[in-house]
Length: 337
Ligand code: AHR
View 1 (cartoon, rainbow, N blue to C red):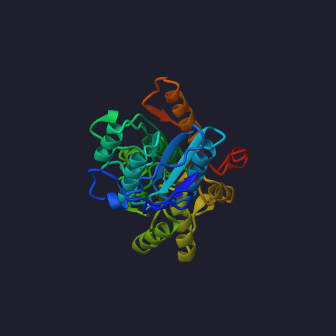
View 2 (cartoon, helix red, strand yellow; view 1 turned 90 degrees about the vertical axis):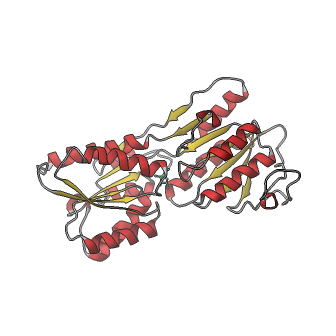
View 3 (cartoon, rainbow, N blue to C red; view 1 turned 120 degrees about the vertical axis):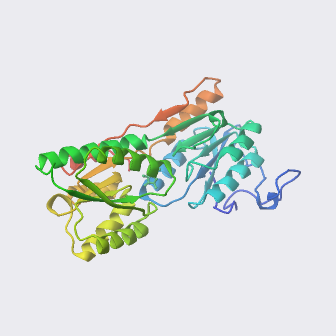
């Protein structure tokens, strides 16, 4: 595998080279050397959006394990470090390098039309992975693989409905704060929309605040501290990923608030990574909606089908479920993340 950092600089395997004849004004920044394919392997450029969360690490691992030399690939990895401009540069590098396929995990949904048009003009199929792109012309990418983020948000809202009913609290005023992920990302948009749709059916559910914690522990903690300063009475925290939840729990500990199955604040989280299973087993997270990062094998299978001239679907949803303290211990067995 070949790694490129967020600035488009090669970390192993290749020499930096200035662009040749190209209409691109930023060509001096671009990596144009064609990656050294191993034998007749398929060269895949992967623009990963960042390394902000445990989930993201599991996703990267899944891609690296699927796109190996033994499996017939040369993988060129670029970490966009949460910046769309880095990802745009990475995709342009891949085009100049004439890779065979591009995998794009986009940090936000919009702003991809031009670069995807450039990939299409260069006849390089793009598979969008994890989050979605919002483009005018869907023929700009070949297929998308990922989670149904809106369904995740809806399911979490429905889980809360049932939970409150079981507690005999369905008619109480319920004060909710939401820690959102990166604004404009599919994971944030879908989880917010899905949960709010259910919340809107309950006039007694008050969404006190929603703010981005950028899918990171540090920012999750910071925003939760502000929520706790602002609101004395919080019944439910909806945290759109586990890393933000970890930070929020620290903030609640410091503020002396109780949470989880025995506490005042019900904690709902997303991802269901291994450390979150530990917290569920301790009763500190009430429910966690899985976000399935094991997408590498399917993406590889799709590329093999394209290589064989087969037609593939436009969208593939991965399977996911909700975990709770009651079923956490049994369900975590044999999980890969
Ligand atoms: O796009 C998936 C989301 O991105 C995961 O929920 C989150 O942990 C990651 O940062």
